Image (cartoon, rainbow, N blue to C red; front, side, top):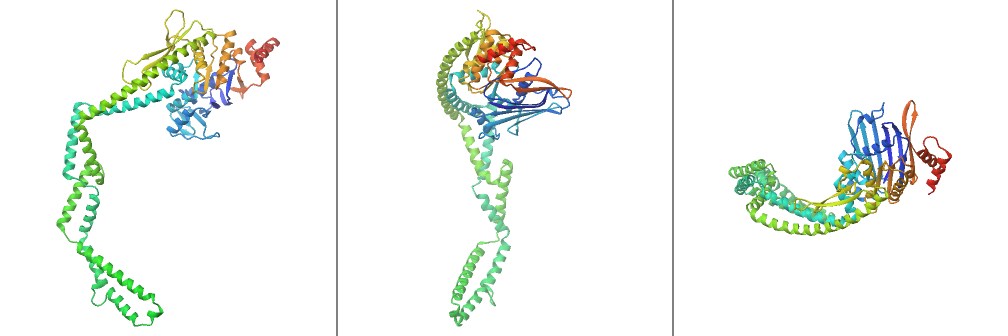
Length: 558
């Protein structure tokens, strides 16, 4: 639901803040007062194309922000999560702020919850938040996807469609695998030849897991063998081999001296400490001697190790991987080669799996088609009944389900769905975009929305002058239908008809005022008394009479 619309320096709306509520809200005002500015600005917040000429004079940019409540739109919240936009607000993360800035040089910027966004993202999210029905180019009723969505929402086909799409994705995934295996013959043969060469080369080298670490350690030892042996000899000399003095002799002498001294009784732990030190030195000497015996100066082995390392490093550079990754690469390429060499068998197995998924898809698609046909019949009858109330009994509304020419599975079912209309008796129904005029399209849209509102997932509907070309009793019906929609969600309606305005839950008045030698648009919510005066003006013109006020009071009292 739309909560707030803020406009800064857009056309004659210098500074306009409007709060919106659930129910039916009408927007009225004299011709040229700026009612269209509100909807145009809202369209910009939803990703419509911008025009720098609409920026107010003496301003560098126009700034529009629209705040929405997402509590009843879980799909929008999921969309925000999926696309990485933050969610916050006073209602546990249930608010979403769309902002658009139009710059004088012609560029524009967009944000969703304070994070930069593209216009495509604004439009995609906006389609979940609000549906604008007017004579503008963005009205959704001209899109076949809207027809499909409305019919499936009316028939409550959501679960059926999800099951069908899950099977379709499996089918499509297998199809892509088959296409990848098949490819063109030249590409297929070239890939096999390349893989065969790479695998043969890796087979000859035969890199082993952890081989590189072992070779590098051995190379380091061999390259420094002389220095290592020298250091070992120096330590052994200190530990035990120096004839004049070494650590073992010193510790042994200390033990003998202590055994003859009264210190052995005064500090008994001292003997244990000397014993432990002698044992530690003996173990260190033994380990050092074993390591010294293991280290050899072997130029031939060093050359072999370095040659092996060079082979591995060069092969890794050739394949653009780390040398440690060669064993894994070897296995991967070997597996791919085996798969391609067995491509006929692999394709056959995949085709069998694909056939099973296709049969399951056809089963799901047939079930969905039958449900759509039933829902289309019911929706068509109910829309035609609403059209009769709107004085369009001569119109005939139909829903066409046309099977795709391609028999392959499709993500949205086996058929395309299109709303058709016949505006004259005994004439075939044709596409809405080709037949209906702007005023007719608005009323057709109203009739459809009234019927589909109980299952529609879009909570905010905007109707721009749906009462064009009607009046009297028909205008009363239009007002009543809009009020019905408002009682189920939120309806915003720009109108010139007093009969429509009288049905609203809230009434906003747009007017122009001269401020500091500039014309500016203002927007105010009318009180009950002010509503009487405005509806009286809509009935009788600028001069409000007792009769027009009495008529207005009577309309509001109904």
